[in-house]
Picture (tube, rainbow, N blue to C red):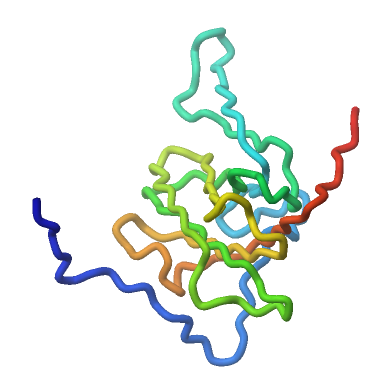
Length: 182
């Protein structure tokens, strides 16, 4: 078996900004204010699928709703993944959502290469989705993480600098604050 060689391998663009540009931080949301293309976006330990009905039991819509499970921004080192769960405004065309995550240095610096990447293709009629940030080893390193979020039309390089729409932050800590009981 031979490996095929891509003669025109897609290239990710280096950051070419002159000076500093600030992408919106989606973790600083205001109630009732959409965030870019997102109606809402949250980090969570997981997600649940909720099927919506047309009013009659068993008559489901095509698009399941996703609900974040234990939303927050602080996670334990043994968490298998961190999820970014979101709802977008209805799309006219299919789109590709992407995330790259980085462990920030103690001085807040961002390494050149991400720890990981995830992409999700969302058909034009769907409104909900999630990105899965998986740990690279047996545990997450304790520290502050930066997530760069991207939206691109299908077929385009998802992690091109021009497609970055915002950022989110999360922390991995040995002790995670307990959720208040209801």
